[in-house]
Image (cartoon, rainbow, N blue to C red; front, side, top):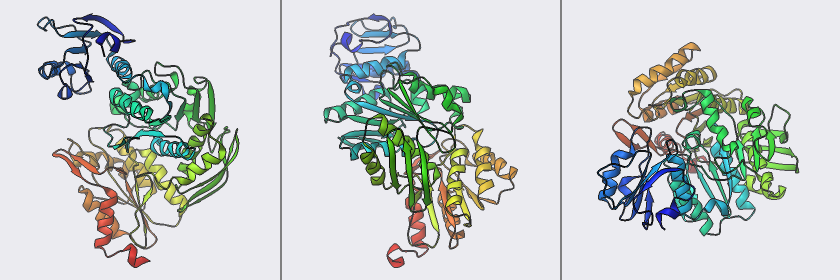
Length: 498
């Protein structure tokens, strides 16, 4: 594809050099540059892409896109696209869409944003669509799935170039819908720029990511971008959690709005609700009529996620029968209130809860399902992330649990003991019963050793993750597998239990 065609719709200042150059690939990582490549030299959170221009050129790049001015020493044979200041990410998104033939235009996109519940809601919507017979793509925290297969997730929402490639894979396989988690980082960094959404879902807004967004209002403003349209017009349908105080600020942005809630008058509400550790049942009262819900998902928090998914299904004109079928077909969401059963006489639950609100919901779910159980919660806080939420996490876990085992999560390059000390402040505020064990495997073992018949052990924070990020590097670590190993060493066996 010729460079001038790739740049259609891109906000550029000056383009110098051969505009008719034939581009062979588009990259934003200089290590992936090949002869004939267009390299986007982006400013990241930690790195300046212009420092890698020479590397891209050595590997054969013939065009560079950057907000910087063209270097005087640059060979005349190299095209330089000077992007309008602040438009680098939008530029990459436009180029990516052009390169892959604008795949979003051939698909119905469903975007889910909010602090908690994004992953479960996307899994539910995807299951509804597949029950209705559609070929889909699913993009989010637990991985990226297209008809070409599954790949690990580097970010909740991938960079625009990678996203457009996945959208093209779905389109080229005859797919019709893609459901994705729209993270606040991705929205602020314009990875979704130029993508029109058939449905946009808002789950809730609680404290998170303030290390990046700095203020709570900036955090919400990033979420709001999904409903303002990401440069491609407002979504056709907005599905909004009416119980969240920020929902009112999303009113009127989409052509059609559906609200859901448990505590506020809304378009979608649950009736005849039954909750147990085996799942939940209720009748969803909706503008499309009543929809009977039977789900293996557990807890009141999943009633919200299911209502959100039903709203998306209605917005996509899926029949009530297929919505009900799709919800019933979803057995579990990896690392979301996932039960670990090795025949032990107590419950072990793995969950991704890594904010104070998510911890509160997790423990409240366990309490609601068994009000007399003793609850043991294992968790840590992530390193090199928002420090202000750490004591809040301690307060949430400590005030609701009978015992907290405080440990490491992904400390990254930060001192694990410093992270733990930040959390301890919150635990001490509520006079919590807690122990400290920085080694996560030892912490899991301590909690499972402490457990007695009828207890509930909650392993929080890492959920689906199969690794732990330490200062020395990334190591294999899966709470689910570690818990199974420890339980087996203790002599429990699913076979023997039966």
